[in-house]
Image (cartoon, rainbow, N blue to C red; front, side, top):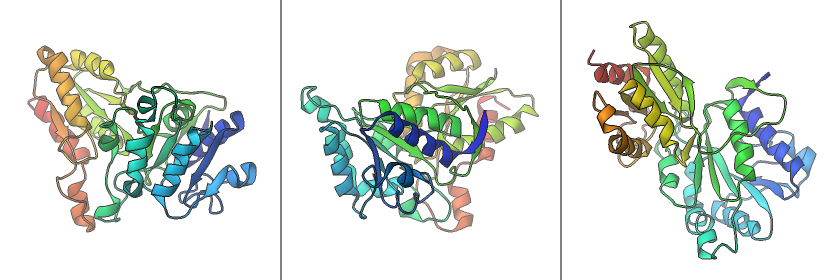
Length: 325
């Protein structure tokens, strides 16, 4: 095992798949000459050349459409958005073309494309650059949505995404690119749609994904001092959702807290709550608790931003509430 940064894990995944398959290419703003806005494609232009690592204009609708179209000629593109906030400019290509082409063509065309880049907040970036889009894309049949929380998962899942014959939304975080973690030296691929129990526990289940799961780890450490054992599930994939992993855990702990960095209306935690109450209602010893951002655009002020974002204290309060402590 080596210890590498999240950005290096992403770069390794893309590079390994491009060596393996000549139909894979990367394009996006500043991915080539600048080595990526977050240096997630460092060195790839030198290795693969300008035909396969392509700098684009600031035109998400345009290069998103080129990527989708190229899948119909046998290519497997990786389209990088500098942030998924910019994907809104090209969302028609993702929703109305990439996600639907297999069905609309009666199976004559598949769309093996990966749209990747950072999602959610990343500090003082203001309301238009701090949005979480996981639930937006997960609402769309035909898309798979992956949100890894560490380098190991990021590499294994990105390799799986590139090999998948359907469009995949692969969501990262600007605040995770420097995170370090252990990654194997050899080849490995992780299955899409399989959650991971990051920490086993007996008293309460905490479900989360992406960078915000770090707050769950902090809370679990604090709660352990009070004799409360938390089981933490990292979804890793939002769609398809590993419902069974959640059900199995809830049947053991009888309590559920969901931590998600998104607005509270109609999000991933809403769907999980519905699934659990439908399939595990008799196992619940307390109402499900959801922890989300405040129901407002993200503020710029650091004081307000701290209040807007979920944190470990919120998790501790929610866990103690379901424990009636």
